[in-house]
View 1 (spheres, helix red, strand yellow):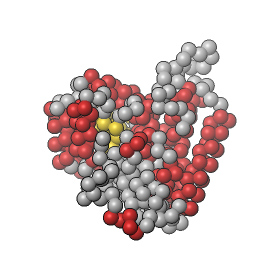
View 2 (cartoon, protein in one colour; view 1 turned 30 degrees about the horizontal axis):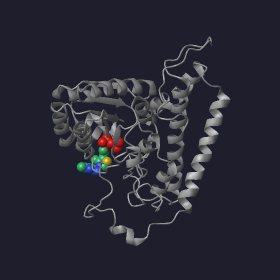
View 3 (cartoon, protein in one colour; view 1 turned 90 degrees about the vertical axis):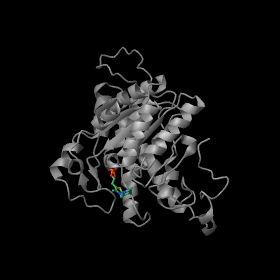
Amino acid sequence: MAVSTKEKAKPKSKSKSTAKKSEFSKETYLWWYEMMYLLRRFEEKANQQYGRQKIRGFLHLYIGQEACIAGAVTALKEGDKYITAYRDHAHPIALGTDPKYIMAELFAKETGISKGKGGSMHMFDKEHHFYGGHGIVGGQIPLGAGIAFAEKFKGTDNLCATFMGDGATRQGSFHETLNMAMTMKLPVIFIIENNGFAMGTSVKRTSNVTELYTLGEAYDMPSFPVDAMKVENVHHAVAEAAERARKGDGPTLLEFRTYRYKGHSVSDPAKYRTKEELEGYKSQDPIVQCMNSILEYKLASEDALKAIEDKVKEQVEECIKFADESAYPDPSEALKDVYAQPDYPYILD
Ligand SMILES: Cc1ncc(C[n+]2csc(CCOP(=O)(O)OP(=O)(O)O)c2C)c(N)n1
């Protein structure tokens, strides 16, 4: 990773250059670039490995949505918790999980982050504060509020960033949790990654309310839309929400407006949308926008960015090699790490 958690999002030091001034430091921009490029490359290669049948079952890709997690991580601090649905490869990687353990999990190998027993939808890394990886749509929303409750109860100043898709906002769990979290002023940020579709169903076909952030207003919760194709916007919105949470003012609902370039899962040819719509979003690609900012602010040269890309490509090749060469779990593992175990290892400390 380009910069450590502590260094992320440092205010920019004064520069004598004549270039247009950037609001964020060079380290922050380069971390964003490298991280988003890694997430993109990692998933493109995972997609290829699926084609080679090295990965089986579901594989929900985050390609196009990278700024959502990259901007959130730089806005938050060490100790904050994260939880999301099944589109979950990017979140732990951005939090610091070595991507080779995520690739090994996709390959169902024993070296995977969930010991090869979770697969694409069930990444989990307590050490990096990532609490899953949940396959039940909307299931993680009350869990995220529960984690936030634990932090408040223990008197820490940590919060829980609770991510979900647009489809999850139609679940009862979303509404019940928003009501309770606001009443109890829990330190939680609810983040809708609105990529326009729940499987093949567009947002406008599921409700008259298509401005999803307004759903929070029913609970008197500060609620905002965010153009999440731009990583800077994501950072700002999450930083403001975090300030509210840490002051004791409770939750915020953010609607990240984003787009997934691929289908719902790899088996979905995405025939429910037009090529023009897809191309329209690709023209606002978050990685390209970040690269343009870096070049415009003269924070790095094209050659320096190319060197980052080459390094990442090599890293992803190593992830695949690691996953491929790892062993499958022993069958005796099947009965371990289940709730019935008295020392079940995945509970919050
Ligand atoms: C409770 C429940 N109902 C239905 C499903 C089947 N299902 C899996 S993904 C999905 C769509 C969810 O879309 P969204 O929340 O927008 O997330 P996205 O895939 O766009 O990230 C559905 C309905 C499920 N996993 N859980």
